[in-house]
Image 1: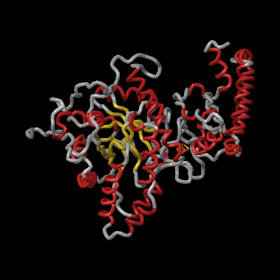
Image 2 (image 1 turned 90 degrees about the vertical axis):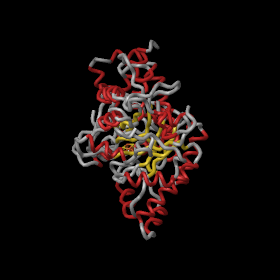
Image 3 (image 1 turned 180 degrees about the horizontal axis):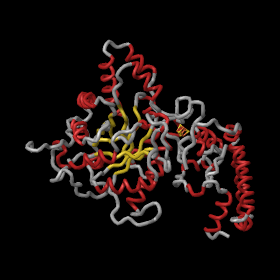
Image 4 (image 1 turned 180 degrees about the vertical axis):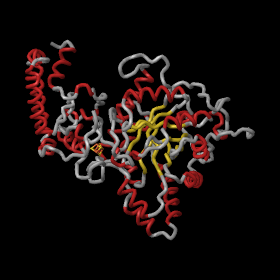
Length: 339
Length: 162
Ligand code: SF4
């Protein structure tokens, strides 16, 4: 390994779209797994998928994160709203060298579609998959849709783990070249039944989760409790735990999110702090920066996952100001003529 | 199989069953060893006959009343605190989604308790409360509407344990 992790350019091949050389003990040929296994504090971010068939829009949205994140999550019909598909965004991103996280929601695909998409995504160089149950169709813009939920988040993890490690489909039919993927899942330490949540993490690990990304964290004591239990069981050694963060725009927005977005827990004290501020946007940003710095200190946390819906530039500012990367510069796309 | 639209639980006994999960666990374990296992040849002889329908009607009646059972054909009540996971609006069989509301109601229907909040409660009352940690395989949708009792007896026969 080179002395300086100068731009993590060590984690890129000659052809930006080509998978990296395999490393022992790694399941994927991607950058995210390398960063985590090296013990670096990782930063991932969620990208808003465009409502458009224009590939350039995908590249523009990804470019905002250039040099600031280790992987970009492409959401899969988040909130049961329709956008460009996750698998297509990931395929576009791998062409130019990004490390995308392909999100699969059980709401929209049955096991036949999912297994096919996993092979397709891996063939296109996608190295990370996040397995989600998904929001119900009721909360989205097309509540008339037929919800699928053939699998759940956990059986989805297991399905892909079987495809990768046992080289077969669920039916038992053989897979000639298995998908080399780093498997992830979502966790929500802040939703009831709170006592059950660490056990659920253990179950996800047993099903195949190698990393997890959490729902938004606004409640540090609750996170500490959860992490303590996870660490006591040694779960942080079996799985990389990334904690979800994001800026709140105002006290009003925070109340709205708490009411309308399933699974987001925002304590009253946070809302009061925003409400009492002169400049609420600034306060929301500072609050997020402080949280990140505190989360970084919690034992067992391997990184953060930044979710800033339609405010990607602010997300980057937060990553920079929080100094969470500690001087490390993640991979950056080299545009033609720049190299 | 699709997830049903939000419906109020049909059975008022659903919460009672969760509160009495320990008793029901005891009953089921005896039912399983004495009736299901003991009379296995009889059950397997019933398969494909008209009497199979009778078993289905009885199972549906009893479990419908107690658990609001949806006859998925692969019963896991013993591992879910006696709260039927098919009453979850997403049909989740491996634990709750991340959307459970702060008061323990379902993310999709605030009037309904989350099936998994009930399950965790029932599970804590059971003697063998480690079963909830086991991984449930993807549901076999082709079994919908069949008797999970007969299916169980058949599985034991397939295992060669007769
Ligand atoms: S809140 Fe509970 S019952 Fe509702 S969809 Fe989620 S897991 Fe199922």
